[in-house]
Length: 423
Image (cartoon, rainbow, N blue to C red):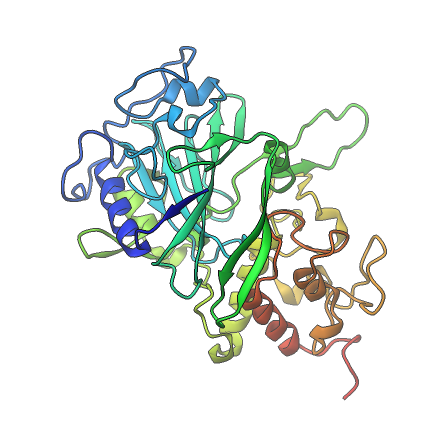
């Protein structure tokens, strides 16, 4: 693991500057003017067999499309190979999510690399349609103090999602030294990591870098097979980059604040964005600094729905805007927590007065009991570390205090149901 003592603010501004200018060897001092392509000069795959040892001026596209390289630096995604939190190679663009999946209090540094001449296509509800050749990087860094994410942090891993000709491909890289990250196909467990949370409490926990094979358990939607002749396979997809989580302002290097989707569209990276951003779905901003107690009832409901969507609905989903007869891996459980699902139409889809499947746990008769979060199995699953019960099953080895506070408050104010406590 490597320590990173630069401030988050400095890294963000640098990454945005380099992202806007393309990064790499030819870096100017200002973002490109509106109308110039953000991935101009980025290069693209040639279709030839790649080499992990190739020397390239920019992204090593051919290796990304064909090779499993032993070192992250082999792909030449960052101008400074020792720092995956800033300075992407030409064509890399940083992005952020308004509500993010919780991963043991880590900060996440996200970049998208799209080959020159290609664009991302707008999708109103599902993940954006990224062209073949796209690479998404996400670096996980544990801050020494979650209330001061601009301070010291420990960079742990960088995950790649690569859209190859035969679909998305995932690779995890562990920062075993300060100089480079190494491929970790079998995963890695780190013991005794510590941070101080926003309440000033020290938390100690183990951290799991996932196996490469684990990625499909969260990133796939699966077909409802119609019989032995139905040979459809699961579809691997990114989780976070949906318009509802990108439809928010981002501070750029020149001091301007710009909507991310609009920036991508005007930078010729995103096609099909509606002219009126009010027509685009927007999830609220929720992070550890949001004071749950100060949220109005509607704000609380919106924040909780977004939190459940990004943390749970990649598995707990079915129908709606998915391809016909596809669902998340837990879509058949009856709990379906998509942000675009109407709660009033079917509260039971959100676990209300629904008995847990696969046995549940004594003392928790229903997934969600409006007005009684303490006996709601959903909240218990978010707080427990028991492998038999915890949710999400991966990417969490400590409880998210701020997230559970949000969901506790949401359950407490839900409309009274048949299983609610008697007044």
